[in-house]
Length: 219
Image (cartoon, rainbow, N blue to C red; front, side):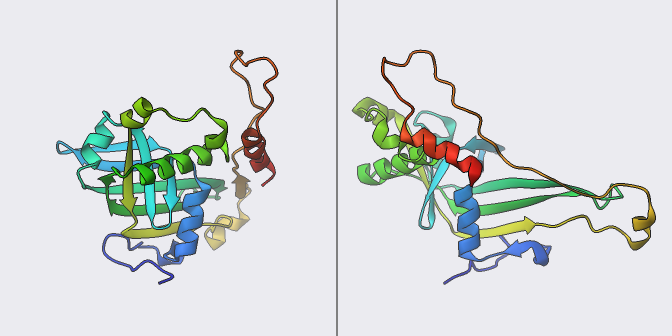
């Protein structure tokens, strides 16, 4: 099935900005680095920014196994995950019609704690490589203590939808005669040159993973 089924959970009110196509949803997810993960703990709503990775129809999150997110979400509770890219500031001639251009995804699913060692290692590898492609193989291998203290949460994509806005402002016809600037200020994420921590071993060169990260600037 090439689209996510619409339901009361994921249906977007403004249909012209809605996308349920799996490829579109996956692309927006894969282009991001930070997701905001919402869940309820002791009757209080919580939203935590987290890095993540996607494997097919599952999102993986990781952090300290003793942290609130792992203890709470690992029980199989429903969660909501949002990922947003800000692409432009849309400045209309009126405050009412001003907006932003964006690509966003909302995912709903039931979270579970990953206990299978192979699945956990694969997820951690992908999360690490999302930050810098190939970094997992460059870095020191995780030891048993580190693996045990790290919690990995799997969230199957049960419901999902993308919402996208592109283009310039849409003003009222009579407002176009006003001497007020209207248009878009594009927004993009730029990576600055890497700064080492001042403790590099002699002869250490810039790794391929960082070069791949910097290549995103021209992407």
